[in-house]
Length: 156
Image (tube, rainbow, N blue to C red; front, side):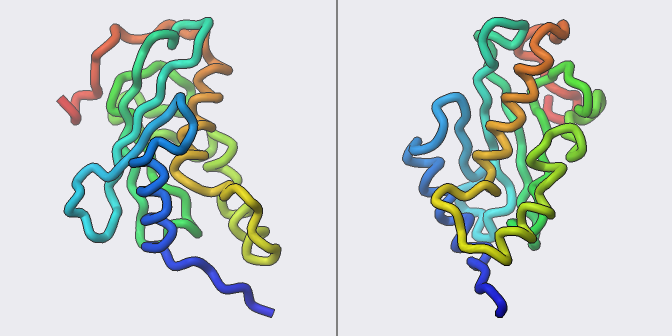
């Protein structure tokens, strides 16, 4: 028996509403980069650095791209703010999907969701990706960081 999948735009509209109303995690925020983007492809996000380490009291800006196969495919995520983290490209800030659990396991989770009823909270979203990246930052909190406010060259 095939399970109906929520259309991409319905899912992204729900994520946009949650992000705009601030109904998500307090340590992350997100929204459309351009409110006129009818395809809801380009998003901006922020992560408040986790406490008790070199990320504390910093706000990190990110770009997220939801391709045409989102949510079956994970978003492409880039740090705009420079950060020193394993798995983040030092020239453009791109987050390697294999370095963050939710991005690495996205396809497996999507396949499980296609077979089983949907859980109360959606495990595959821009918000869960940002939360997972923040957790990854916390796991690497002792790494020295670039000066606050520096951005990757392509975003200056």
